[in-house]
Image 1 (cartoon, rainbow, N blue to C red):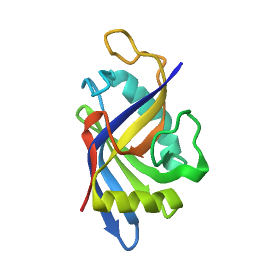
Image 2: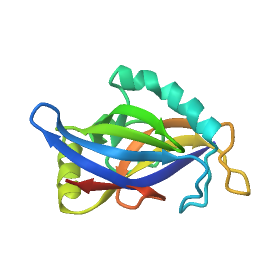
Image 3: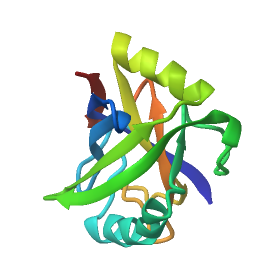
Image 4: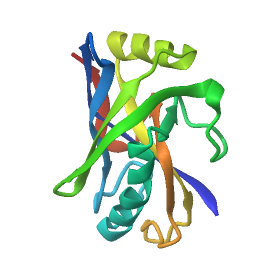
Length: 157
């Protein structure tokens, strides 16, 4: 299997005294060809979102600053914790808390000063037509500088 990553940019930064910094917006899209020429079928994404919902509830859906070269989560690189995932049409909207970790603090600065995106990370194969196959296994979302899913930029507000 191959490490598959997709990036989204249409996110906003929210800051409250009680909840700290959060990013919200489109985390993934179904049926949309992205900049990597990949298309995720909605039924595959729905299946994978259901699988990671338990991690959201358990507060264990960690994300890193930048995509690593492997699928494992590196605790030293954790920047976000995904807290909400929901479908709106063909888009997966999410919310993630930007953590008070070394990478989370770097992420806060980058989001405030410029633009960051959010990108899915998973394992699987891709057909010649760009469709992600049934063997896809979603791992998490990471903050990145160059997303492939056009609607997934992080904006500071």
